[in-house]
Length: 307
Ligand code: CP
Ligand code: NVA
Picture 1 (cartoon, rainbow, N blue to C red):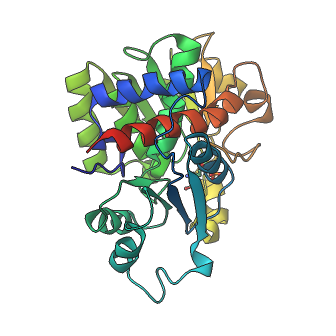
Picture 2: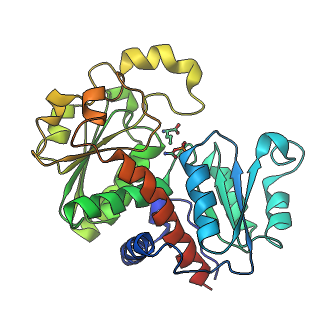
Picture 3: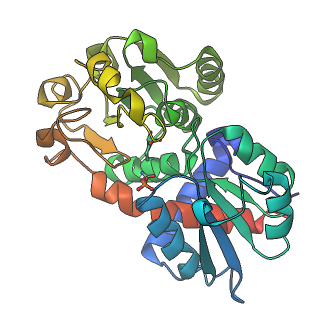
């Protein structure tokens, strides 16, 4: 049966570990797996802007012996003149996989329901699971393991990154703490799912409005923009609402002294993170950005092998 990757728990904990092991193998030997030899084509569809996702998937598909086909939906029929289901039926007869960055998560579900080839979420309003695989690979590289570590996220706790961190880090057996202003906390269903996974994997979940409590004794700290794609008109209000939730050196001082700092990027220095932290010695953001390529290649290799 074809497998899709739309959200972090579309794979099991064991499958996540298997993909991460493959990611480190592919980092050491980038051209060792060639599932798209032919070459087969992979559709990379973008409804929103991107630098890292576009580059890492394009390079990654080439590394795997395939041809990346970038489709900016502004220049295609999709979404305007043609339904998602009909688009899926056209694409799946010609491409090996469909990778899509979009707004409503339901679009990805519709694409997957109508596609005979794997559909991968490269960011929706609700999840960014490919980023989480790269972040897990980065933490594993710097800390040696994942299980039992404390991961803290501070900022917009109601966005795609917060949701994916809650689910993805719990799946890896980590203790996940998420902090944001009271009106920007994750919805109850996400928290309940993360708690269920954490109970199975030996981790825990903390959701709080207290940023210091979240980062206290953490091994890894992350944040993300306060204004996600599609929320640009709310900028003025959000900048006010998130005051006090920026990651700076003072906040970092409550984490373990060897804690690492992550950010999916793009970053807005002086807002969600200070320049001192993101450009400082604890920051691992460039490893994290590079690991998008390796982690996503591992995911694509793994998906291609599921029949
Ligand atoms: N982190 C991330 O997905 O970056 P892009 O928006 O540049 O793809
Ligand atoms: N939360 C951000 C992530 C960007 C990679 C957004 O959706 O814009």
